[in-house]
Image (tube, rainbow, N blue to C red; front, side, top):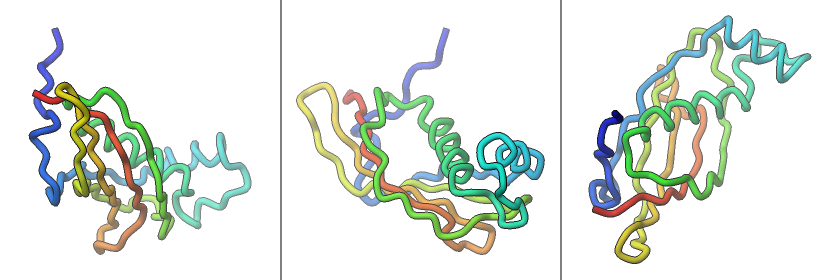
Length: 135
């Protein structure tokens, strides 16, 4: 039996920063990703943008797996600032920018997501709109 969903629309406040966790750019995964999806990319340049997106997407999915979230409606404003090298540890965070109740049963959560490298520099950011159940 699965665990009950523990984060609902009302549980997240505007301005709240939610840590998404951390992950490192694995050298073997980087080489496999480049070989499969971006032949010709030199791994010395670091993780390509598509891999950075995939790493963020996995961190967000893992964090939100216990949320009463029915779907992500949009991912907008993607910005890629750097291509982190193999071994670089990245930390993710989500900042709640706005909320919009939609009827009695659900609401839209607007959030900014950032991936930061070990020095605290921005690697990637985007905006999301997600549909969450209300309590």
